[in-house]
Image (cartoon, rainbow, N blue to C red; front, side, top):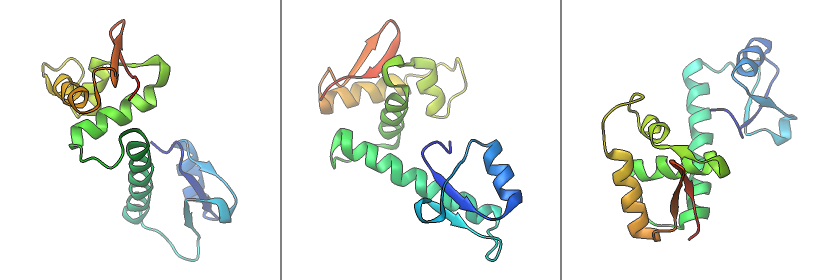
Length: 138
């Protein structure tokens, strides 16, 4: 969740908490999220800042891969999951989990989103190799 977001803080407690969650700490001027012990952030404020950074990063990925087109929330989640999966690909079950369904749930939501994305961007946009979906080419 925190991959790709950089932090700076002089608050030792938050540093330990965020380190346990996989946060990367950098110099203050290079950080995406900055907070100090002088200005305490509540957990809600920190969560809001992290979610804002995640949204910004995901918007850049969507813009790069799909341009400025309007996509549904499910389509965006599928594209982000496939982007993160890279060359290893992502199973249908993993895609369903990205959409909020439990493992093994019976639903066509992921397949429907993939079908819609292929209609928009072409059949080669998402490929299926050995049961694992990958981003293809535009």
